Image 1 (tube, rainbow, N blue to C red):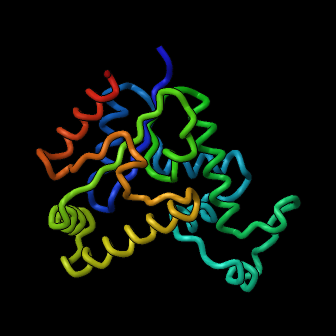
Image 2: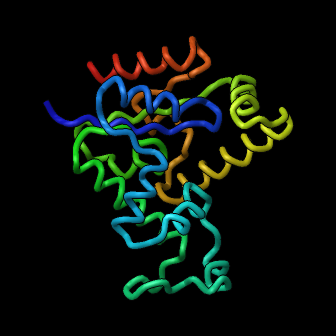
Length: 200
């Protein structure tokens, strides 16, 4: 039996991270979310702090990178913005962990990066707006107004990052094999749906 690569795109506050972890645990395979940054740092030589500062953030303008004086960080990377350096490092990290075998990867355009891999299952997790607000309020200890603003900013950032690096629409169903609302019978049911789908 071949490897299985499960990539999870998710709306902010939909529980995608929790679902991804549970799927990985159920299958006994590695889980990568922020862990991708550690792999990227180790393999690229870029610092953790640098990669975190550009993690799934929308790409700024070329002019911004020049003004910040970070256009040339290392030999051989002339012409790349700092955002592109970070994205390239994450891309190589995604490919690297996939080469090691089955895994679950959350975000970071992994569905696009691994698009030609046999055994790829591309999942998108969404949820009702009110459910997302409640989750973020509870998880982050913030008000509904603050959660609303955070949802708006994070979804916009993820959509912009994904679109820039893939030329695809982040939340478009046609880019995924399975789209699930975690509001329907909760995250555990979403986990089971993914597991059943993978078995088939």
